[in-house]
Length: 453
Ligand SMILES: *Cc1c(COP(=O)(O)O)cnc(C)c1O
Image 1 (cartoon, rainbow, N blue to C red):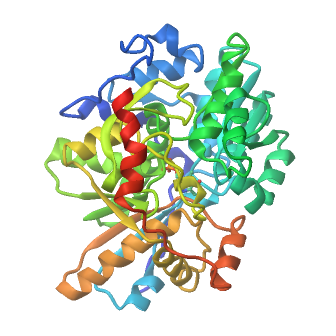
Image 2 (cartoon, rainbow, N blue to C red; image 1 turned 45 degrees about the horizontal axis):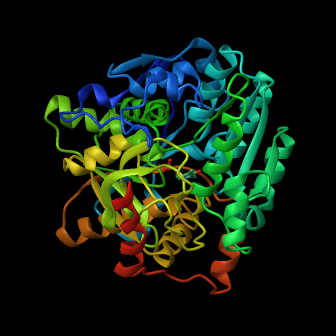
């Protein structure tokens, strides 16, 4: 009998609605708070930085939100994405577990980020916005936003975390190809950037700092310029649920249902995108699917952080968000999974973790690269350093299934490919990568400033 390797949907089977898990959460997430007034942010206050429709989605308690037809049409450039059975990886592990992955690496930018870039730019365009600003870590968000801004003829400035700017020059060239202006952060263009450089001229930057710079630029011209964020916020997670909605349909076609769903975790968007439609099965149908978020050992906000209101950026310009955080001044090590170097987690994911509805795990850098190598040499796709965290966790679970002699079904999100991250692989081959086990003292130091908020 021939076996099915991948399950491909037709365009007509793509979801026409996004899922908003807030509608089904037993405890709703706490609201974002204004750092000055200490009151929940109003729509008017939020509209200084974000497009109005995105704010409506951010605060929505509706379980479903229609996907505009123009957005659906743009999704068709690469969606639906394949659901793949990792037979070769299973064989290499000699595991009774079935391993599937959702391949989000097939987008033009090579990651899941365009799933939210398209609607974010679309709603800004509808509102008449002419300029967008943003930050980017590994460069995936900036490149996703670049090609969509080009489509809608919107001018884009991207603050790129300095360590990635130099480690990943080709992402910058992708963004330039699609017409965006890319600035290494910290820069001298903003007071947040200048302050960071004054404190440390060699500062390698962080996502939090780059966000400060991008927000600072946007609020100077709120009529024509808005800021966009590629992760963390609820509207981003909502847009990403196209991943999980497709995957649900595809698992049904495969005649299977996962026992374990895994996503790597930066701010939570690819994890939420795949995981939340499956979590709905737990909340609404009494299923017991384990939903696992995987973060780097060197940036452990979910496993070692504190649930507290904190800024989304390092300079303290954003609203206060209720989150698992390491403190907004936490400076993560220069690991190669740039997209996972962020101090906090989104409000929705944080509440779900607090309520025990999802699990969090952390994995050291070398184990993730070993997992990435095994994946590249079995399933043949070179994964993004971020995605290797999900792969490493899938491998841990598959090995456990073998030890326990149980057949489990594991589904993970391949959030991106690593073809623009080959520098990281080069460093791995050269033996230059290391694990970073951070001390409690270091975490406590950046957490201590939360008491001042
Ligand atoms: C940005 C990125 C991540 C991390 O961001 P999340 O919002 O947590 O998904 C993970 N993988 C890839 C490939 C990315 O580009």
